[in-house]
Image (cartoon, rainbow, N blue to C red; front, side):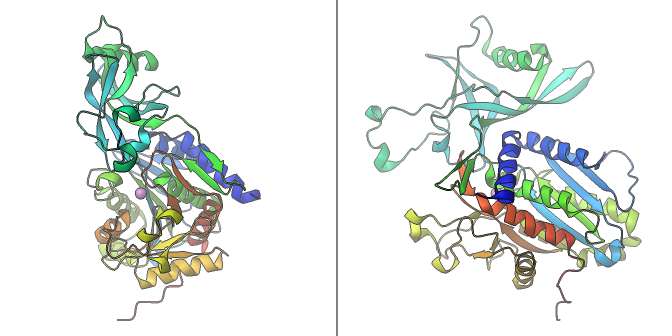
Length: 444
Ligand code: CO
C-alpha cells in the first residue's frame, strides 16, 4: 500500500468507526463541513445565501444536503450533484423491547431493509442511533452510542442444528431474532429496564427517555487485510464509503472549481425504499434546490434551465466479482476490487445511467487518470436499485449510477478494495472541478 491510497482508505475506516448509525454519519459529515467553514441552514428559517459560500441543511438528523454556491451564474452552469445514502440494513430496537422469560433478558428488534442476518451472529454487538428525551417542555434528540459490546446473537450449537452447513442459517424472524442483553435489574418492570439503561448512559432520568431510533451496530473497528493490505473490511461500506468519497471530493475541490452549484445529497431510508419525508423519494432535494433557485435564479423558467444543465452522480456500491461464485456474474461485465470506480448500467433503469451519462463519467475518469469498469447484472437475476433512478425521475436531471466494487453487500462486515477509495475521490473531485461538462446538447 502506498501514500495517498492508504491515507484515504484509513480515513474512510475512521469515518465509519465514528459513524455507527445514520445519525452519527450525518454528525461526522457536519463536523467536517463546519471545520471547512460551511454554515448550517435551518429549514424553518429564511435563508440568506451568497455566491461563493458553503452551506449545509440537515433533515431529521439522518439526511443531509451540503452545497457550495460557486462564483459564476447558476443559470449558465446549473448544478453538479452527488447523491448517496446514510443508512445500512440491519436491526432496529422495538418500542417495548425487553423480553424476560426463562434465561437472560433479550432485546426485541425489527428487521430494517435486507441484511444478511447470519452475519450478526456471534459478533460483539452494540446499539447506536438517537434517543428522544424530554427536557422540561421540549423533546430533544440525543445521539446514543455504547462503545462497549451490549448485545449478542448467539448461534445454536451445531449439535442442536445438524444441517446448518447444508441448509444455511435460517431464522424465524419473530421468534429467533431477539438479542441477548444480559441481566437487567429484576426489581424493575420490563418496560422501564431498558429506559434505565439508556437514561443512565445519557445522564437523563429514566422517566425522561421517551422514544428512540436505535440500530444494532458492530463494535469491531475497520481493518485492512490481504498480503499487501489491499483490501479493507468494516460495517456500512454500503454506503458510507460513497458518502465519505463525495464529502472529500467536495471539500478538496476548492475555489477554482466549476462556477455553478456543487451539491451533496445524503439520504436516509434508501434501504427501505426511500419513501419518507427525508428519503430520496421525498421532497428534500427538491425543496433545497427550490430555495437555492429563489436566490440565484429568476423565475420557474430559469430554474428549469439550470436543471437542464445539471448532472447527478448517484453513488452507491457495486457487486465485485467473487471467484467462488463465478456463475452469478455476467463475465463480460464482472467488476473487480482495486480496479477503479464502476459505472452501473441496466436497460430497465434500475440504474439510471444512460449512454450519455456513461460517456461523461468515463471521460471524467480518463481525464483524472482513474481506471473505470462497467457492471451489468445477469439477465436472470433481479437487479437491485438505488437513489439514482428516483432522483433522476423526480427532478428530471440526467444521472449516472456509479460506485466502488465490494464483496458481501449487506453483511455486517463488508469488504472492498483499499486502492479504490482514493480513485473514486479523484474522479468525483474532477467532476466538481471541470469547468464545463463534455456534454453537447443531446441531438433531437
Ligand atoms: Co446501497
